[in-house]
Image 1: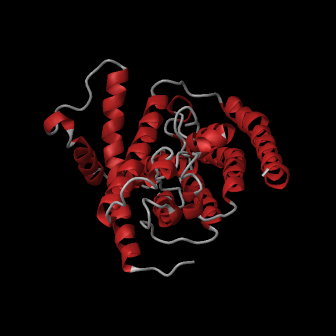
Image 2: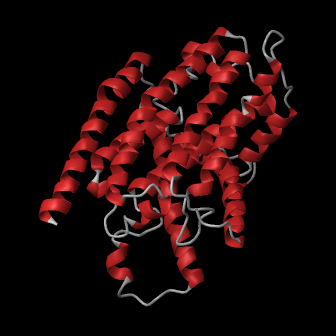
Image 3: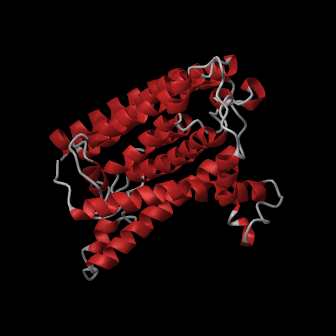
Length: 339
């Protein structure tokens, strides 16, 4: 593990600031994209082009009455919304945003990611239970079952990327894609990871824990004011984090396509120029996947619960295992017999 430097603190502060604000930007983008897909107007009243609509939404949530169920577990009911927000913020610590632009580089960064990512569901499950409502409880149980079902294929898809890297460090994962992105070397793993990332964030078509037509509002039925706002914030933060992880694991992180071929012949860029280029590349890739999250939500209808479970256990998990074994055999043969 590298020592924490002044640059690390700066990167951490900027990353947390941008992540918190990216949720508001993603909300505005979702409304705009949804309006475009449905051939209607989006936000266009609050500020120019409706740009101040997210601010109005936050003010509305702040001014609403905070209601807690009288028969619920009040302490856990209050703590639960904080858990998914905190876990999303913790993820930023190991994601590289550019060459040398990261908070810390630990040898087990991938394991840290999987551990922290699996904690977010506790907030949803505890919130559903503490509300003392059958709708909320069912939503929390669905979230727990969905997390278990898709965490396994997601882990196998990540493991298949580690085969090319030989390291659990995010820095090594990104550097290993300097010439060839993992989407080209491991397309099956990429598809599995993307589907699992959608399921882990409880977004369409995997939003069974909310499912308004079935469970009123699911796990946050009994939440109001900023407690509901924190669940709302956490959902979009996990969309942003999921987009960052897709970019990092399969789309070269901050590297341009085939960067290793032309970076050696181009003049050495200054430190500031290189940092701006890396951050810009990473941001564009992340924005594309945020757009994809939104696009999918307003294009594909919600799956039935049995379809979600069947896809996770009977499709993605076996395919991810065979994909991992196949890549392991190919890489072993390449290094020992053909390399």
